[in-house]
Amino acid sequence: MRLSLVRVACISLLSGASLVGCSGETSSDASGTSDLSAAPDHALSATASTAITPFGKMNPACVHEVGATDDSAAAPVDESASLSACLAIAPKVPSATTGGTITADTDAEPPGWVEWADQDLASGVSFLSADFTVPATPSNVGDQVIFLFPSLTPSTNPPIIQPVLQFGEAANGGGQYWAIANWYLTEAANSYTSKLVKVSPGDKLRGTIEGTGTCSAGRCTSWTITLADLTQPTLKTTLTTQAGRHHFVQLQGAALETYQMTGCDQYPPSPIAFTNITVKTNSGAAFTPTWNLFENTTATPDCGFEASSPSPSEIDLAFTTK
Image (cartoon, rainbow, N blue to C red; front, side, top):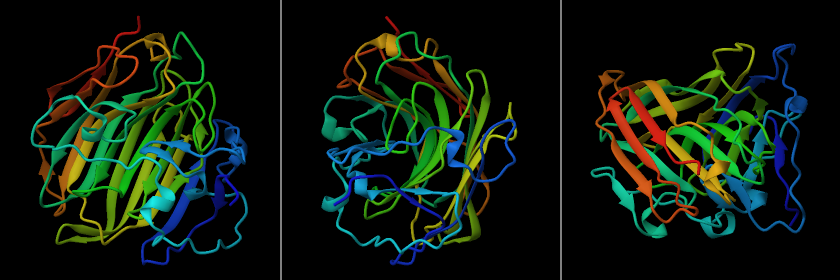
């Protein structure tokens, strides 16, 4: 088996879910066409056994990039492949009824999740958005991988859909800079990512997950995941998926996930604030969340993680850097 990130254009999934569209602009002086040169590509080593993604470590053969530079049709991807074949570390969903510290890896989301805010909405979610700012570069830059995002899941996951800000080199590429991409992990643990777009510290971002088409009975026929740079409007990445059979009832308004950290100074120098958080029910009505806050005490190193929510529309993720 060739262990490499698989680039595809727009994909049909055999089980009925499909990725129906993808787009993205690449840089402030770009033409707006799909261009994978916007951020350096990463070809996984043939000896690599796992790939770092925003939902844990996965089999690299199960990570697929959407948005290739050519328009050629891609071969269908079999979404019915077994979880054991595609998932190296199974994501877990914590109870959203109470917050608190996570005292064992088996209680957490993917082990890299160090702090987050969670909410259940039994009727289903049709819209989630949050604004956050690209942090400054960590004072100690090494091999760390940092993910920041809001996300949606059903009552069990996978699947999960998420617009992600990334620092470091992960399954989709990257390096010692901040970049944005959208991710969709299917229920059979195939993962799809939009192309990676480099952004700058201080840029204000807006991550949006929106049910499109028809939303009823707790489900939407398709979903569009967008991460836009409001400071540099030409920088934007979008992933659209027909994951209509999924009943997304659990939302994470903000999450911090990290890998390969060797010291607290490898985190950004300041806490991360997710603001202007907006949630809508499956019927489109506004919903006011009461966030359940989580910190993972098993994270190494322990950097004094503290999630807080001064209002329903804001979540702050804090940590020490010493």
